[in-house]
Image 1 (tube, rainbow, N blue to C red):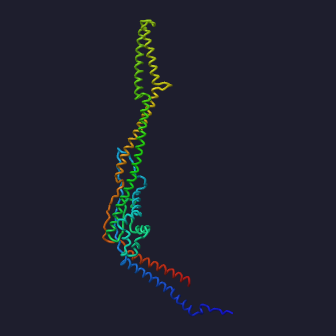
Image 2 (spheres, helix red, strand yellow):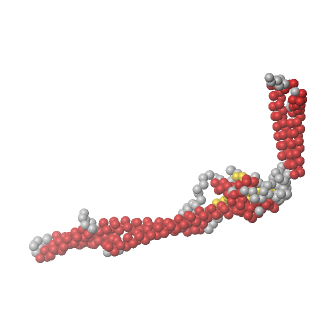
Image 3 (cartoon, one colour):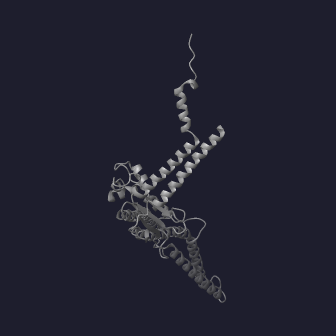
Length: 386
Protein backbone atom coordinates (compact mmCIF):
# COMPACT_ATOMS: atom_id res chain seq x y z
CA UNK A 1 0.00 0.00 0.00
CA UNK A 2 1.42 3.43 -1.05
CA UNK A 3 2.13 6.02 1.62
CA UNK A 4 0.54 9.48 0.83
CA UNK A 5 2.96 12.30 0.04
CA UNK A 6 3.12 15.22 2.46
CA UNK A 7 1.41 18.50 1.37
CA UNK A 8 3.47 21.46 0.18
CA UNK A 9 2.64 23.36 3.32
CA UNK A 10 4.27 20.59 5.37
CA UNK A 11 7.65 20.85 3.55
CA UNK A 12 9.97 23.28 5.35
CA UNK A 13 12.12 23.98 2.25
CA UNK A 14 9.22 24.82 -0.02
CA UNK A 15 7.66 26.92 2.72
CA UNK A 16 10.82 29.00 3.05
CA UNK A 17 10.97 29.45 -0.77
CA UNK A 18 7.37 30.63 -0.87
CA UNK A 19 7.99 33.09 1.94
CA UNK A 20 11.00 34.52 0.11
CA UNK A 21 8.98 34.90 -3.10
CA UNK A 22 6.21 36.72 -1.26
CA UNK A 23 8.71 39.10 0.30
CA UNK A 24 10.33 39.81 -3.09
CA UNK A 25 6.99 40.36 -4.80
CA UNK A 26 5.60 42.58 -2.10
CA UNK A 27 4.09 45.81 -3.55
CA UNK A 28 6.39 48.08 -1.59
CA UNK A 29 9.49 46.19 -2.74
CA UNK A 30 8.26 46.17 -6.39
CA UNK A 31 7.57 49.89 -6.27
CA UNK A 32 11.00 50.60 -4.93
CA UNK A 33 12.64 48.35 -7.52
CA UNK A 34 10.72 49.92 -10.41
CA UNK A 35 11.53 53.47 -9.41
CA UNK A 36 15.16 52.54 -8.83
CA UNK A 37 15.33 50.96 -12.29
CA UNK A 38 13.67 54.03 -13.83
CA UNK A 39 16.09 56.39 -12.15
CA UNK A 40 19.01 54.18 -13.13
CA UNK A 41 17.86 54.11 -16.75
CA UNK A 42 17.41 57.87 -16.77
CA UNK A 43 20.89 58.31 -15.26
CA UNK A 44 22.44 56.05 -17.86
CA UNK A 45 20.67 57.91 -20.68
CA UNK A 46 21.83 61.22 -19.27
CA UNK A 47 25.40 59.93 -19.14
CA UNK A 48 25.09 58.68 -22.72
CA UNK A 49 23.67 61.91 -24.13
CA UNK A 50 26.10 64.11 -22.21
CA UNK A 51 29.35 62.14 -22.52
CA UNK A 52 29.14 59.38 -25.11
CA UNK A 53 26.86 60.57 -27.94
CA UNK A 54 28.88 61.94 -30.85
CA UNK A 55 28.35 65.46 -32.13
CA UNK A 56 26.50 65.74 -35.44
CA UNK A 57 26.71 68.93 -37.47
CA UNK A 58 23.79 70.03 -39.66
CA UNK A 59 24.25 71.89 -42.95
CA UNK A 60 21.18 73.50 -44.50
CA UNK A 61 20.32 74.88 -47.93
CA UNK A 62 17.17 76.49 -49.38
CA UNK A 63 16.45 75.99 -53.08
CA UNK A 64 13.59 76.69 -55.47
CA UNK A 65 12.91 75.42 -58.98
CA UNK A 66 12.33 77.96 -61.74
CA UNK A 67 11.28 77.32 -65.33
CA UNK A 68 12.80 79.17 -68.24
CA UNK A 69 10.83 79.77 -71.44
CA UNK A 70 11.37 81.29 -74.87
CA UNK A 71 7.69 81.68 -75.69
CA UNK A 72 6.95 84.73 -77.80
CA UNK A 73 4.35 86.01 -80.20
CA UNK A 74 6.42 84.95 -83.20
CA UNK A 75 6.86 81.35 -82.08
CA UNK A 76 4.26 78.67 -81.44
CA UNK A 77 3.78 77.61 -77.86
CA UNK A 78 5.55 74.24 -77.74
CA UNK A 79 5.25 72.88 -74.21
CA UNK A 80 7.68 70.16 -73.21
CA UNK A 81 7.20 69.86 -69.46
CA UNK A 82 3.57 70.32 -68.58
CA UNK A 83 2.77 66.78 -67.50
CA UNK A 84 2.79 67.08 -63.73
CA UNK A 85 -0.32 68.58 -62.18
CA UNK A 86 -0.16 70.74 -59.11
CA UNK A 87 1.95 73.66 -58.03
CA UNK A 88 4.81 71.63 -56.52
CA UNK A 89 5.20 68.83 -59.03
CA UNK A 90 8.80 69.75 -59.85
CA UNK A 91 9.65 70.11 -56.16
CA UNK A 92 8.29 66.65 -55.38
CA UNK A 93 10.30 65.14 -58.25
CA UNK A 94 13.45 66.80 -56.95
CA UNK A 95 12.74 65.70 -53.38
CA UNK A 96 12.25 62.11 -54.47
CA UNK A 97 15.57 62.12 -56.30
CA UNK A 98 17.47 63.74 -53.41
CA UNK A 99 16.28 60.96 -51.08
CA UNK A 100 16.76 58.13 -53.57
CA UNK A 101 19.27 55.29 -53.60
CA UNK A 102 20.79 56.76 -56.77
CA UNK A 103 21.65 59.93 -54.88
CA UNK A 104 23.09 57.87 -52.02
CA UNK A 105 25.32 55.93 -54.42
CA UNK A 106 26.57 59.15 -56.01
CA UNK A 107 27.33 60.66 -52.60
CA UNK A 108 29.06 57.50 -51.42
CA UNK A 109 31.19 57.30 -54.56
CA UNK A 110 32.47 60.85 -54.09
CA UNK A 111 32.39 61.39 -50.30
CA UNK A 112 32.73 57.82 -48.94
CA UNK A 113 29.62 58.05 -46.78
CA UNK A 114 29.98 54.42 -45.74
CA UNK A 115 33.30 55.11 -44.16
CA UNK A 116 32.07 58.32 -42.57
CA UNK A 117 28.87 56.94 -41.05
CA UNK A 118 30.48 53.63 -39.92
CA UNK A 119 33.53 55.22 -38.26
CA UNK A 120 34.22 53.16 -35.12
CA UNK A 121 35.34 56.29 -33.25
CA UNK A 122 31.70 57.45 -33.12
CA UNK A 123 29.22 56.24 -30.54
CA UNK A 124 27.70 52.85 -31.35
CA UNK A 125 24.08 54.02 -31.21
CA UNK A 126 24.35 56.78 -33.80
CA UNK A 127 26.84 55.25 -36.25
CA UNK A 128 26.31 52.51 -38.80
CA UNK A 129 27.79 49.38 -37.34
CA UNK A 130 29.28 47.76 -40.45
CA UNK A 131 31.07 49.29 -43.43
CA UNK A 132 29.65 46.66 -45.80
CA UNK A 133 26.05 47.11 -44.67
CA UNK A 134 23.53 46.16 -47.42
CA UNK A 135 22.37 49.07 -49.53
CA UNK A 136 18.83 48.85 -48.14
CA UNK A 137 19.98 49.33 -44.53
CA UNK A 138 22.55 51.91 -45.65
CA UNK A 139 19.77 53.85 -47.36
CA UNK A 140 17.63 53.65 -44.22
CA UNK A 141 20.50 55.08 -42.18
CA UNK A 142 21.02 57.77 -44.83
CA UNK A 143 17.37 58.82 -44.56
CA UNK A 144 17.83 59.25 -40.81
CA UNK A 145 20.68 61.70 -41.46
CA UNK A 146 19.20 63.82 -44.27
CA UNK A 147 15.86 65.53 -44.77
CA UNK A 148 14.20 67.40 -47.64
CA UNK A 149 11.12 69.38 -46.68
CA UNK A 150 8.84 71.18 -49.15
CA UNK A 151 7.05 74.40 -48.30
CA UNK A 152 3.73 73.91 -50.08
CA UNK A 153 2.96 77.63 -50.06
CA UNK A 154 6.24 79.02 -51.44
CA UNK A 155 7.59 75.91 -53.16
CA UNK A 156 10.94 76.21 -51.35
CA UNK A 157 12.87 73.02 -50.61
CA UNK A 158 14.82 72.93 -47.33
CA UNK A 159 17.69 70.43 -47.64
CA UNK A 160 19.44 69.34 -44.44
CA UNK A 161 22.30 66.88 -43.99
CA UNK A 162 23.95 65.62 -40.79
CA UNK A 163 27.58 64.52 -40.46
CA UNK A 164 30.17 64.07 -37.77
CA UNK A 165 32.20 67.06 -38.98
CA UNK A 166 31.17 70.41 -40.51
CA UNK A 167 33.03 69.93 -43.80
CA UNK A 168 31.34 66.63 -44.61
CA UNK A 169 27.91 68.02 -43.71
CA UNK A 170 28.36 70.95 -46.09
CA UNK A 171 29.83 68.68 -48.79
CA UNK A 172 26.77 66.40 -48.60
CA UNK A 173 24.31 69.30 -48.86
CA UNK A 174 26.28 70.96 -51.67
CA UNK A 175 26.48 67.78 -53.73
CA UNK A 176 22.78 67.05 -53.19
CA UNK A 177 21.87 70.50 -54.55
CA UNK A 178 24.24 70.19 -57.53
CA UNK A 179 23.19 66.64 -58.38
CA UNK A 180 19.53 67.60 -58.02
CA UNK A 181 19.90 70.47 -60.48
CA UNK A 182 21.77 68.25 -62.93
CA UNK A 183 19.10 65.55 -62.63
CA UNK A 184 16.23 67.98 -63.24
CA UNK A 185 17.99 69.48 -66.26
CA UNK A 186 18.73 66.01 -67.64
CA UNK A 187 15.02 65.20 -67.42
CA UNK A 188 14.11 68.47 -69.11
CA UNK A 189 16.69 68.05 -71.87
CA UNK A 190 15.66 64.44 -72.46
CA UNK A 191 12.04 65.48 -72.85
CA UNK A 192 13.05 68.39 -75.08
CA UNK A 193 15.25 66.12 -77.22
CA UNK A 194 12.38 63.66 -77.58
CA UNK A 195 10.09 66.51 -78.60
CA UNK A 196 12.65 67.74 -81.13
CA UNK A 197 12.94 64.25 -82.60
CA UNK A 198 9.16 64.13 -82.89
CA UNK A 199 9.11 67.54 -84.59
CA UNK A 200 11.84 66.42 -87.00
CA UNK A 201 9.76 63.41 -87.98
CA UNK A 202 6.74 65.65 -88.41
CA UNK A 203 8.74 68.08 -90.56
CA UNK A 204 9.90 65.21 -92.77
CA UNK A 205 6.37 63.89 -93.17
CA UNK A 206 4.94 67.34 -93.89
CA UNK A 207 7.72 68.03 -96.40
CA UNK A 208 6.84 64.86 -98.28
CA UNK A 209 3.18 65.80 -98.09
CA UNK A 210 3.85 69.30 -99.45
CA UNK A 211 6.01 67.90 -102.27
CA UNK A 212 3.33 65.36 -103.19
CA UNK A 213 0.71 68.12 -103.30
CA UNK A 214 2.96 70.24 -105.54
CA UNK A 215 3.62 67.30 -107.86
CA UNK A 216 -0.11 66.59 -108.09
CA UNK A 217 -0.73 70.22 -109.04
CA UNK A 218 2.01 70.16 -111.70
CA UNK A 219 0.69 66.88 -113.11
CA UNK A 220 -2.78 68.37 -113.39
CA UNK A 221 -1.44 71.45 -115.18
CA UNK A 222 0.51 69.29 -117.60
CA UNK A 223 -2.46 67.02 -118.23
CA UNK A 224 -4.77 69.96 -118.97
CA UNK A 225 -2.13 72.00 -120.78
CA UNK A 226 -3.00 75.01 -118.65
CA UNK A 227 -0.75 76.86 -116.26
CA UNK A 228 -3.63 78.80 -114.74
CA UNK A 229 -7.12 77.53 -115.59
CA UNK A 230 -8.63 80.45 -113.68
CA UNK A 231 -6.71 82.90 -115.86
CA UNK A 232 -7.76 81.03 -118.98
CA UNK A 233 -11.39 81.12 -117.85
CA UNK A 234 -11.10 84.85 -117.24
CA UNK A 235 -9.64 85.39 -120.74
CA UNK A 236 -12.42 83.30 -122.19
CA UNK A 237 -15.00 85.42 -120.44
CA UNK A 238 -13.34 88.50 -121.86
CA UNK A 239 -13.47 87.00 -125.36
CA UNK A 240 -17.15 86.18 -124.95
CA UNK A 241 -17.76 89.72 -123.78
CA UNK A 242 -16.00 91.14 -126.85
CA UNK A 243 -17.92 88.82 -129.18
CA UNK A 244 -21.20 89.87 -127.58
CA UNK A 245 -20.21 93.50 -128.06
CA UNK A 246 -19.40 92.83 -131.75
CA UNK A 247 -22.69 90.97 -132.11
CA UNK A 248 -24.54 93.98 -130.74
CA UNK A 249 -22.77 96.27 -133.22
CA UNK A 250 -23.56 93.96 -136.14
CA UNK A 251 -27.21 93.72 -135.16
CA UNK A 252 -27.34 97.50 -134.87
CA UNK A 253 -25.82 97.90 -138.34
CA UNK A 254 -28.22 95.37 -139.83
CA UNK A 255 -31.23 97.15 -138.37
CA UNK A 256 -29.91 100.42 -139.77
CA UNK A 257 -29.35 98.93 -143.26
CA UNK A 258 -32.86 97.45 -143.28
CA UNK A 259 -34.09 101.02 -143.07
CA UNK A 260 -32.95 101.78 -146.62
CA UNK A 261 -32.18 98.31 -148.15
CA UNK A 262 -34.19 95.26 -148.94
CA UNK A 263 -33.70 92.19 -146.62
CA UNK A 264 -32.29 90.14 -149.53
CA UNK A 265 -29.78 92.73 -150.61
CA UNK A 266 -26.11 91.62 -150.64
CA UNK A 267 -25.10 94.07 -147.87
CA UNK A 268 -27.80 92.83 -145.54
CA UNK A 269 -26.97 89.19 -146.37
CA UNK A 270 -23.28 89.81 -145.52
CA UNK A 271 -24.17 91.42 -142.19
CA UNK A 272 -26.46 88.50 -141.35
CA UNK A 273 -23.65 86.03 -142.17
CA UNK A 274 -21.35 87.91 -139.77
CA UNK A 275 -24.08 87.85 -137.12
CA UNK A 276 -24.62 84.10 -137.49
CA UNK A 277 -20.86 83.41 -137.30
CA UNK A 278 -20.49 85.56 -134.22
CA UNK A 279 -23.40 83.84 -132.51
CA UNK A 280 -21.90 80.41 -133.27
CA UNK A 281 -18.54 81.54 -131.95
CA UNK A 282 -20.15 82.80 -128.73
CA UNK A 283 -22.00 79.51 -128.33
CA UNK A 284 -18.79 77.51 -128.77
CA UNK A 285 -16.90 79.63 -126.27
CA UNK A 286 -19.72 79.34 -123.76
CA UNK A 287 -19.71 75.56 -124.12
CA UNK A 288 -15.99 75.56 -123.44
CA UNK A 289 -16.56 77.63 -120.31
CA UNK A 290 -19.62 75.86 -118.86
CA UNK A 291 -21.87 73.05 -119.99
CA UNK A 292 -24.09 70.41 -118.36
CA UNK A 293 -22.00 67.71 -120.00
CA UNK A 294 -18.39 67.28 -120.98
CA UNK A 295 -15.06 68.42 -119.53
CA UNK A 296 -15.61 72.17 -119.31
CA UNK A 297 -13.24 74.86 -118.18
CA UNK A 298 -15.17 75.73 -115.02
CA UNK A 299 -14.80 72.12 -113.81
CA UNK A 300 -11.08 72.32 -114.57
CA UNK A 301 -10.85 75.56 -112.58
CA UNK A 302 -12.62 73.92 -109.64
CA UNK A 303 -10.28 70.91 -109.62
CA UNK A 304 -7.26 73.16 -110.02
CA UNK A 305 -8.30 75.39 -107.12
CA UNK A 306 -8.87 72.35 -104.89
CA UNK A 307 -5.39 71.03 -105.70
CA UNK A 308 -3.90 74.48 -105.26
CA UNK A 309 -5.60 74.94 -101.86
CA UNK A 310 -4.35 71.54 -100.73
CA UNK A 311 -0.83 72.41 -101.83
CA UNK A 312 -0.89 75.79 -100.07
CA UNK A 313 -2.26 74.20 -96.88
CA UNK A 314 0.46 71.56 -96.91
CA UNK A 315 3.05 74.28 -97.47
CA UNK A 316 1.70 76.31 -94.53
CA UNK A 317 1.80 73.25 -92.28
CA UNK A 318 5.38 72.63 -93.34
CA UNK A 319 6.37 76.23 -92.52
CA UNK A 320 4.70 75.99 -89.09
CA UNK A 321 6.47 72.72 -88.35
CA UNK A 322 9.81 74.25 -89.35
CA UNK A 323 9.22 77.18 -87.00
CA UNK A 324 8.28 74.84 -84.16
CA UNK A 325 11.34 72.70 -84.85
CA UNK A 326 13.70 75.66 -84.62
CA UNK A 327 11.98 76.81 -81.42
CA UNK A 328 12.28 73.29 -80.00
CA UNK A 329 15.98 73.10 -80.83
CA UNK A 330 16.60 76.36 -79.01
CA UNK A 331 14.62 75.14 -76.00
CA UNK A 332 16.57 71.87 -75.98
CA UNK A 333 19.83 73.74 -75.48
CA UNK A 334 18.56 75.61 -72.43
CA UNK A 335 18.20 74.51 -68.80
CA UNK A 336 14.42 74.38 -68.80
CA UNK A 337 14.36 73.80 -65.04
CA UNK A 338 16.81 75.80 -63.01
CA UNK A 339 17.42 75.04 -59.35
CA UNK A 340 18.03 78.45 -57.81
CA UNK A 341 19.80 78.48 -54.45
CA UNK A 342 18.20 80.91 -52.03
CA UNK A 343 20.52 79.91 -49.18
CA UNK A 344 23.83 78.26 -49.95
CA UNK A 345 24.84 75.19 -47.95
CA UNK A 346 26.35 76.61 -44.78
CA UNK A 347 29.42 75.44 -42.88
CA UNK A 348 28.03 74.67 -39.40
CA UNK A 349 29.97 75.90 -36.39
CA UNK A 350 27.95 74.24 -33.64
CA UNK A 351 26.59 70.65 -33.48
CA UNK A 352 22.81 70.87 -33.43
CA UNK A 353 22.46 67.12 -33.06
CA UNK A 354 21.96 65.33 -30.80
CA UNK A 355 19.87 67.57 -28.57
CA UNK A 356 21.48 66.36 -25.35
CA UNK A 357 19.47 68.14 -22.68
CA UNK A 358 16.19 67.62 -24.52
CA UNK A 359 16.83 63.90 -25.03
CA UNK A 360 17.94 63.39 -21.42
CA UNK A 361 14.81 65.12 -20.10
CA UNK A 362 12.59 63.11 -22.45
CA UNK A 363 14.17 59.84 -21.32
CA UNK A 364 13.74 60.84 -17.66
CA UNK A 365 10.06 61.70 -18.18
CA UNK A 366 9.39 58.51 -20.12
CA UNK A 367 11.15 56.40 -17.47
CA UNK A 368 9.12 57.95 -14.67
CA UNK A 369 5.89 57.52 -16.64
CA UNK A 370 6.64 53.84 -17.25
CA UNK A 371 7.54 53.36 -13.57
CA UNK A 372 4.31 55.04 -12.53
CA UNK A 373 2.35 52.83 -14.92
CA UNK A 374 3.93 49.67 -13.49
CA UNK A 375 3.22 50.81 -9.92
CA UNK A 376 -0.38 51.55 -10.87
CA UNK A 377 -0.75 48.04 -12.25
CA UNK A 378 0.76 46.57 -9.05
CA UNK A 379 -1.63 48.60 -6.87
CA UNK A 380 -4.61 47.46 -8.94
CA UNK A 381 -3.55 43.80 -8.63
CA UNK A 382 -3.06 44.18 -4.85
CA UNK A 383 -6.48 45.76 -4.43
CA UNK A 384 -8.11 42.91 -6.33
CA UNK A 385 -6.28 40.34 -4.21
CA UNK A 386 -7.40 42.05 -1.01
